[in-house]
Amino acid sequence: MSLVVMKFGGTSVEDAAAIGRTAAIVKGRIALGKSPVVVVSAMAKVTDQLLRTAAAAAQGDRTGALAVSSRLRARHRDTAAELVKKHDDCAVLVDLVDRKFDALDEILRGLSAILELTPRISDLIVSHGERISSLIVAAAFHDKGIDAAHVDAREVIITDSEFQKAAPLDDFIEKRAREKLIPLVQQCKVPVMGGFIGSNEAGITTTLGRGGSDYTGALVGSALNAEAIEIWTDVDGIMTTDPRICPDALRVKVISFEEAAELAYFGAKVLHPATILPAVKKNIPVLVLNSRNAMNEGTRITSLAPHCKSPFKSIAVKKKLSIIDVVASRMLMSHGYLCQIFAIFDKHKCVVDMVSTSEVSVSLTVDSNASLPDIAADLSKLADVKYEGKKALICLVGEDIRGKNGMAAQVFNAVRHINVRMISQGASEINMSFMIEEDDADEAVRSLHAAFFQDPDPSIFDVEARNAVHSS
Image (cartoon, one colour):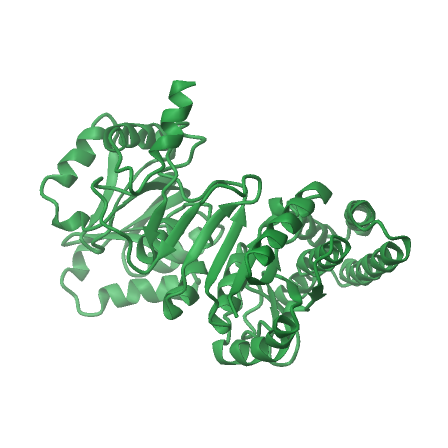
C-alpha cells in the first residue's frame, strides 16, 4: 500500500475552483497507484472570521456575531451548491452545512449572554471552519468520481486539554488512525478530515494552535507510516527568501529536516514550525507543493540533504519582536540567576527566541505581546529592566555555517549599513541570526540575498526558473 498523506491549506480549498483543482490533484495521485489520506484546512480567512465572531459575541454584540456567521454560512452554502451537481446530494450537503451553522449560532447566542470567552469555547467555535470545509471537500470529491469518506478529525487526533494549543498524544493518535483510517484505505476509499482540530480523552474539542493543519498532516503521516507527507499550499515550495521582498528569490529543490525546522521557527511562512517533528521521528519525506501549479516539483524535505556549494539555503525574517534587557551588577556570577529569569518567562508562557549574555546583563528577544509589561514587572524584582519593540530577527540557514572561515565577516559586511542589535552564532551549526530594527528588515534581506545567491548551486536551487524569467 503506497500511502501518502496530502494536506491542503486554506487557499487550496478557498472556493469551488480551488477545491476543483484539489480534486484533480488527488485524482492524479490515485492514477499513479497512490492511496491518499487527505487533510484540509478551513477555507481561506474563515478561522480569522470565526475568531472575530467569538470576540464580538463575548463583548455582547450578538447581532454582529450572528451577522458574520450568516455571511460565512452563505459562503459555504454557495460553494457546496457550486461543487455538487446532483440535486439530492447537494440538498443533503447544504442541510449538513446549515446544521453546523445552526449549532455555531447557538454557541454564539450563549456566549453573548455569559460574556466570557474561555479557551475551551474559543476552540469549539473556531473548529467549525475545518469541520465544515472537510464535509464540503469530501462531498465534492465524491461528485467528481473519487470514492471519498469523511472522517471527523476529533476521532483521530487525541490531545491533552491545553485548549488553543493542545499537545498531541502520539500513542492514542496511532491507535485511532489505524482503527479509523486504515480500513477505509484498504477499501480503496479516500479519507478526508479537517486539520488543526482534535479532542481530549473526554471527547472535548481542542485545537493544535494556528497553522496546526500542517501538524495534523504530519501526525497522521507518522501514525500511518506514510510513504510521504505532501503539504499543498499556494507557493512553489520553500524559497531562498520571501519573494515579496526579493522578486528574484529561488525555489529550494531539497533541504534537510533540520534546516526546514529552523526556517519555519524563525519566520518562514510556508510551514508550521512543529510540522517537521513527527516526520523526523519516522524519517518520512515531506514535500511542499503548489496546488495552483501542480506540475512544479516543489521542495523535498529529507533527513539528510545533498551537499550544497552555496553557503546558505534560505534567509528568514521574523518581525514584531521585542528586546528585553536585564541588568543586575549585584547578581554578577550569582548561582541560579539565569534560572530565575527563565522561570519568569515560563510563568508567562512566553517563548524566548534569542539570548545574549555579558558579565552583568542578559538580553532576550521575544514576540511582542500584551504580557510584556507583566514580564518586565516580575523581572524588575531581580534587576533593572527595559524593553523595546519593533525589532526583527534575520536568520540565515545553511549547512555547517559554524565551520566555515570568514562567514560571519561576509554576512556583516553585506549589512554594514544597518545597525545590528544582537548576534547569535554557535548555538547551531546551521543557523546564524541577528536582531535589527524592524524598519531595516527588508533592506537587510535584499542585501544578504544579493550577496549570497548570485551564483547558486543548480543542484539545490531552481536556477532554470530564474534564467527563464530573465531571458523573457
